[in-house]
Image (cartoon, rainbow, N blue to C red; front, top):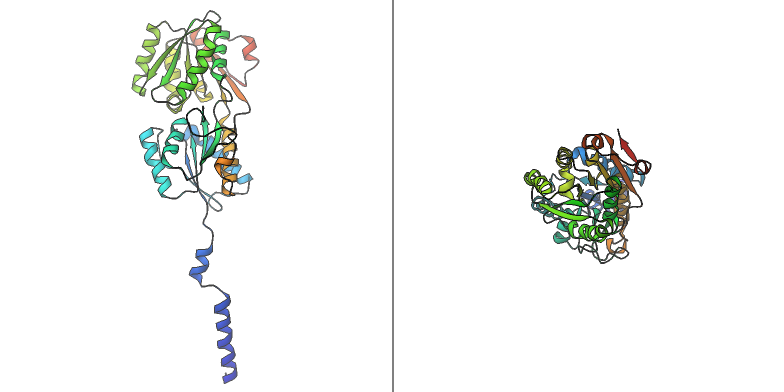
Length: 332
């Protein structure tokens, strides 16, 4: 190699160094994959269909999990103390958005952060409990999808019980202590009860260990049927509640179809698979730069009616044909 060639090679190498960033710098410039924290408060077997629907919807919008987005599913059991710890861990790990199911978890999220975007799903009354300023303009760092489509939904559940048992006059209301859904639900029930000639008998429980004694109280009070207030506690303990209602021959109405699949009599509630899909759409908006407070809170567009005729036979009630014809699913 002559002197001229050597000079030209040095100049070329210098030019290359100036035009191409160092490897470390190039790696720093690569955008990090967005991370989504997911808390559903239930057992994996019962909530996996929601997770699958969420992942599928993300995929349809162009997100491949593991390549374009990471979803973190920390272990938690729906207990407020445990959820608070898990929420704190997610916030410290700097997730880009948190998806949380249920009123209890959403209240925990509200207390834990005012900055990390939160999409709540299946919350009974987000305005009344202070999660958002209004459904149309949430403000703050939260938006989501409600559990109730209207304040009259619990009244409709009570009406269904009355159609099944026209002579019904005393109804127990099972509620979990500390559940923010209770006040909203009781307002709806108390508004509907007088016109139906029904007296409500609220029964509060603090743990699953108190469920059996709670049904003893219902019997003592002369309850003829049962309304179960939907919440994370009654979702997690749906099987046990269904078993006890059947054993005590109490017609029961629930917010979760999963409880009817476990032996509850009837449920009226939203489609959680569709709710998970809507949650994915809200996450997409947030990842693309829309502030949660500018995204209107959505409400379920339809409710599903599920009936368990096996349970009806066991407890000795007849479901009117008018209700059966309205049902989305009848378990026979």
